[in-house]
Length: 81
Image 1: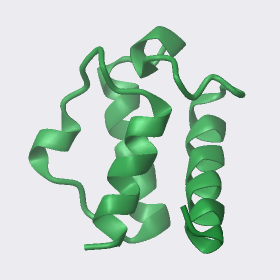
Image 2: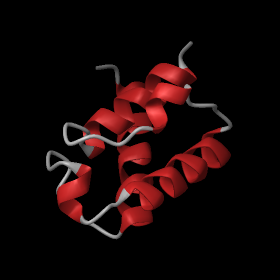
Image 3: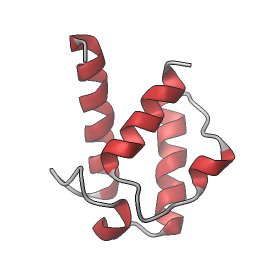
Image 4: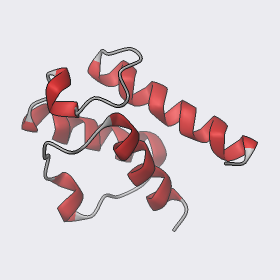
């Protein structure tokens, strides 16, 4: 990963962790960190507003496989479209 991409990755990662109130648990499933479906949608809205992006409808469904790192990758993919 290029240096600028890494900086962007880490910035988004920090934003998400601060938004849900966790620290350093980026590989855990978001639901295991206490994020329910309403909190997840609120997080998506925060990300959309912060990064001026729009998630696809299928990205709004929380499931047990989503980690903070997965969400960072989704944000970066949307930004880089």
